Image (cartoon, rainbow, N blue to C red):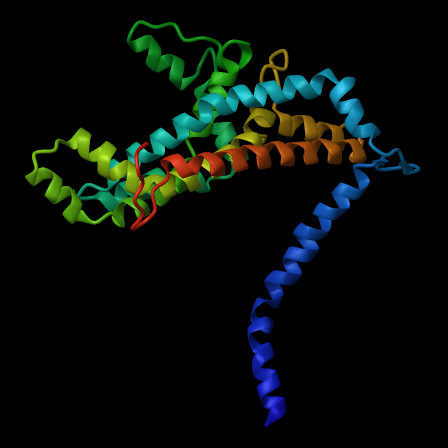
Length: 299
């Protein structure tokens, strides 16, 4: 009887064991290993040599591409993050309306987010083609001569932002789920008091949706700093490295120059930057995120 009780206590751990094993082998293990080799001169082939913090000091003091790629990524994030949040929220509000065929439109808007990144990049390559692209053709119909998007230092990063906005179906569904959880009687009471739609949006929808906005904001920031596939396929970091994202910098150091130790140090700096931004967002959330049954006193 005692053995049966002991086995019954182990059963829940057996169910979660596959996830734990996968996490240790494929996530935690490589994470710790990358931290260790970031202190080494670690070529793929050849002798490994411990060099302490040299990879980190070289990165900050003797590698202009580190600062350039970081600045390109920050510029991308400054445009992409707010636009992605706003567009996903607007789509969620539209799809939250009680109209015929709304479920079909939800499917249409979500499908691009499950398309392979390479396939999506190929599609946008034809859209942004300077001579035969669909986008420039549509612009020509209204008398606008479109730029050579992917070969212009002024427009290539803009093209990356536009292409990245295409796959925000997941954020849209999360916003939609948040909107479904807002009690409708709040809107009915506001209408009885004479409140308009704009007032309802800023005084009811946004405050009650703020925890969802917080989650999507953090996920979008992380995604912005991990942007790689579109630039790698469409521009290769060009023209003149105007789309040379930080993730591409990490990728090339590892798989083009075979400096695994240096690339691991790059990746850990990215991790610390994203962690700092996430903590900053969490710190600020106390002033703008409202949770259920919470009352905030205006000072």
